[in-house]
Image (cartoon, rainbow, N blue to C red; front, side):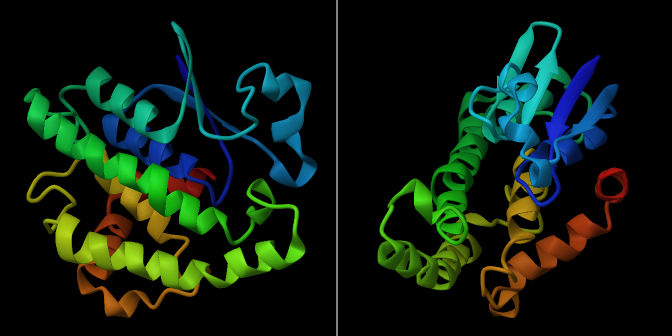
Length: 204
């Protein structure tokens, strides 16, 4: 059976939703960040990065949201999160998820994780002050160039949708006015109505 290591408010929620959408047989282990459980020897033996998500499979541990989402999509080909067989279409999904991982998540992390980039308090403060504008710029690009609608890739739901929805959960706290982005706002509403999302929210 699969085991997902997650924590509230983190990007691991995307993998949680995808597992629910897939109808996977899995268990959920909530890592208590308030107790620094992610830094414990027990968790570091699972993921030496000290972060979530991590997915335990019968073949080993997977980390990083795009990789876990792709694994779930390929492992459950008859589910709503099944990945397309066409290499180009799959690459389009991966391109979107890579942008969320490498750019949007990093822009968000500058708010609370500035110490990853600098030890200078003034630099850390400057990074924090840029979060709202940087995240708004990311949303504008997604809204105008990447979100096909009604789902990320168009008419078909995909592993990109739980990921976008999860990151959108950070926008208000990052100072982004979501009402400026009607496509994203509609996507949030659609996602919140899905039974798999409701199950995932109830579990954590």
